[in-house]
Amino acid sequence: MHQIDQTACTISFLENDIVHVHFKDGRVIEHDEVQLMFDAIEQERKGRKALLLVSVGEGSTMSNDARAFASGPESSRYIAADAIIQRDFSHSLAANVFMRYHKPGRPIQLFPDRESALAWLGQQQHLIE
Image (tube, rainbow, N blue to C red; front, side, top):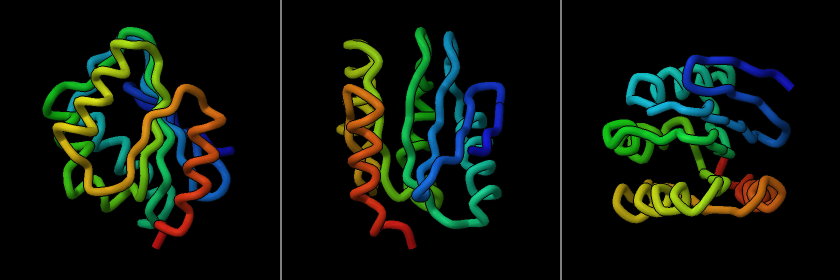
């Protein structure tokens, strides 16, 4: 497994086109940090889309601008589907806002644990172009 450590997150390249992004504790993730994450994924995967597994550390959240960018049409250039692991109730609320307000143009689901998120991503393999 290959990993890239960035200021805001750790990116792990798993099997079956799955990329796990873990946002570090105590961060407000900004637009430029999301762009750096997408750039690293694009470079590592040589432009091939990924199935994204997202986990978020304690006390971390995304700015409104970062959420809008992460769910915008440009982000679908890098990501075919998102599986977000719910950390706690407040994170679940923020993730629901991301899904319902920003409406990413790709499949996205919330999961209580890593195993169910990975199982669902495995079913999305057909979305990789």
